[in-house]
Amino acid sequence: MEDIRELLEIASPKKVTKLLKISQTKGKHSVIGELHRLVKRDNLTEQQIVAELYSPTHTPSHPAYRAVKNRLRDLLTTAIMDEDVYSANYKDYDNAQINGFRQLNLINLLLLRRAWHSARYLSHLTLRRVKDFEILPINHRLASILASLYLGVGFDEKQFTKYQTMTDYYAEAERVLNLVSSHYREMRRMMYAHKLLPNEIGEKVGEYVAGCQHLVQQYPQVSALQAMFFIMKVHGMTLLGDYRSAIHTANDAEAVLTKCKGAGKQSLSLMALTRVECSIKLRDFEQGSVQVRRAELMVPANSINHIKLSEYAITLGLQTGNFAYAYAQLAQVDREVLNRLLTQQHVEYWLILEAYVNLLVLAGRIDPEEQQIKLPDFKLAKFVNNVPSYSKDKQGMNIQILIIQVVYFIIKKQYGKIIDRTDALVRYGSRYLMNNENLRNNCFFKLLLTAEKCQFHRAATVRESSKTYKRMTSPQAKRLGRANSTEIIQYENLWEIVLENLDTTLPDGRKLRRRQQA
Image (cartoon, rainbow, N blue to C red):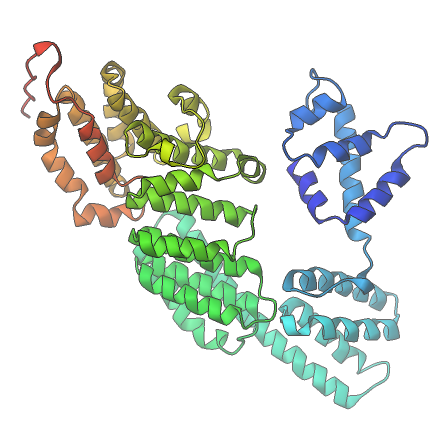
């Protein structure tokens, strides 16, 4: 269903309406028209749509539904392709790119049919419209076509020289773009492979940047090249932990990109998001909140990047201890947009963020009465059942799911539920958290287990956990922790909440068990 909704967003409504009227059988109800109407209602799931069209007992695999869905997909694709290329607009970069490629396809068809004069006319017209946007594949191909045509029909040496020079210029620019693209892809490969430490990847990226910077500077108006180069440069700095330089570089990138005609909003959005992300890494709330407000002016509303900005804003509040800010940012997120644009696994990540915010409410760190918008009630069992993907990610976000459960039980004084899980938590820590990248995760697990060993007695837990706490907060642990992005609330703040909620006296007058000496 996502592909149908994507096509619906970019197809011309007039064309779609016209084609729907043609497809409708006179005097009969149009199932395809009804499906089109239902798909436009973003709040409906595919199962609900099938129920409306047929019956609640049918599923999306119902043959009749699949057939009409395919018909609607074909109709929308036809509506997109059947637009008048001559009257297309070139007001911005995205439209210039879409319509430029469409014109180029038509020119290639004219050349195949030996319509030389028409091809030359349309090539001139298209190049004049798209040239200043510096979209390299389009400009290069159009200049090459014109250079070839002025060697054949209507030979003109002056025009040939003009367009051949232009062709050579764009060919070299594309070579540089391909070089930068290759470096960028290699950077992403290293990041996904997890075979090198972040600083090692950052050093290699720095070498790539130094090697091609002088080439990139020769093409200041090519926004695609400038954007990819600066994204790579900024990533390299963040991998090295040089977040302030990354923010300054993102500012430089914005200054360069805004001088490119019609620079893509996507590139400017990425620079804005990078500044927010670096502020989170610096744990600088003042800087971060300013960057969030600045990014809101640049990131399109109800877009994937806008959802990412909201995620960063929530994370900023959680990471810096500004918990009320995180609550307010979460409360204003449009859940329908969230569910429509994100995959199920990404929606689960938002549920984990929401669980942490509700945990802070339960711990008294956030007062919901002071907030304009209230979050729905939180139920731990429902939350655990709603994050199946991350529950399988044993070295990733499942760590946070387990931590949420243990801290929740401590706050609610449900110690028996923790004791029942103690052996499983010990095995989990020894099996999944022994590598260097998980040092802080491992230490925090040990802190929680220490609380259980001390029968959830505050003073005893503080005393017995001091060595583990020092190890968790050591420079080495923090440096290694940069490679692991699962820590949503700083463990120092989370441990403080745990200690606040431990008992100051032992229940039923029991004596504290002595910790066994190794």
